[in-house]
Every structure is written in structure tokens, then in C-alpha cells.
Image (cartoon, rainbow, N blue to C red; front, side):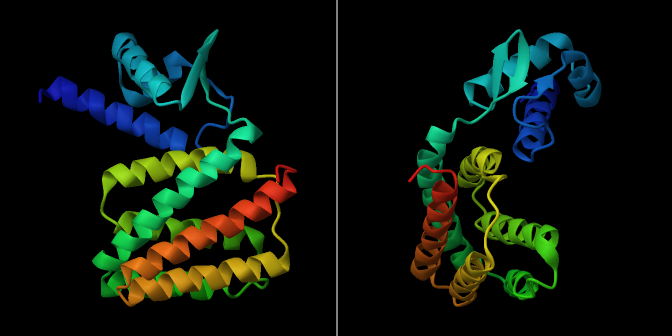
Length: 212
């Protein structure tokens, strides 16, 4: 692989990561001049990168480039994809669990269980950290990227949904079930717990959006 090819791959990865992380809001226009400056890319390789991400479904080309927007009717399929990915990632995390990971997940669970003292913003931060820690511990970049795309589409549509206190307590109990399975190195139980958690969330969100 040449230095030029490596730089192109790194720039594509950086732009993809920025989109998946939500640095650009859904429907936001991507200005080529700004991207050329921030990614240190020429116009031709940038357009090649944008075409690549268009093929992945992350951006759309109209009169310019825009971050893709998700249709609410797609949400059930997004949850199917997320359930598959999170189940696989949790199972792999259980196989790869280290003392440091176990301690980190336990701290995140304990933090979330301090609700409502911590407030929703901190709860959301801890929740995101928990799922990201499990996903990264799986040590499989291909499933991780699949999960990140499912998360990207999911968060586009979930933002208006506010969980009730009972629903938050249920989610916290499900997080602890995932943690305990990972801690015990039980891949089957971890995968089942992760899929069950996604299914619970699916029911809450689809009901709130009137899609059930």
C-alpha cells in the first residue's frame, strides 16, 4: 500500500467516523472546501471519498453532499440490525473480557444506577460509554463498523423519545445483566442479554413513535 493510498484510507476513515459520531446533524450539507481543509485532501480524492461514503449509505448527493436522513419506517429494520450486532459484540466481549474491562463496565453500571440523582444528560453519556466499551472489547472491527452504522441510523430517530423512570430502571437492570455475563465469560448469556436489551428498547421507541 502506497503512502498516498494510506492517507486516502485514513481520511475516509476519519470522515466516516465523524459522520457516525454525529459531528454532522442528519441532513446537514457537507461543504467540499471545509472538508478539504479539515481532512487535508485535494478535491479529486475528497470526491472519491464522498462517493465511497455515498455507497455506504451515510451521505446523499443532491445539489451538493448531505448527511443521510433516516425514514421512520426504516426503524424496525435498524433494530433488527442493531440486535444482531450487539448480540455478537457482547458474546465476543465475554470471551475477551479483561479485569480492566470488567471494572470499567461495573463502574458504568453503578453510575447509571445512580439515576435520577445524575440527571438524563449524564445517564445518556454513561449509557453510550457502556455500549461503546462492550463493542470495542469484542475486538472485531468489521462487526464494530456494522454496529456503528446501525447506531448512527438509530440515534437519528430516537432523539425525540424520552424514557420513563420505570423504563430507565429496566434498562439499567438489562445493562447489569450484560455486564454480569461478560464478567463471567459467558458468551451465550451475554449475547442473549444484549439482544433482549435491544428488543426492549425497540418496543419503547417504536411505541413512542407510533410505529407498533
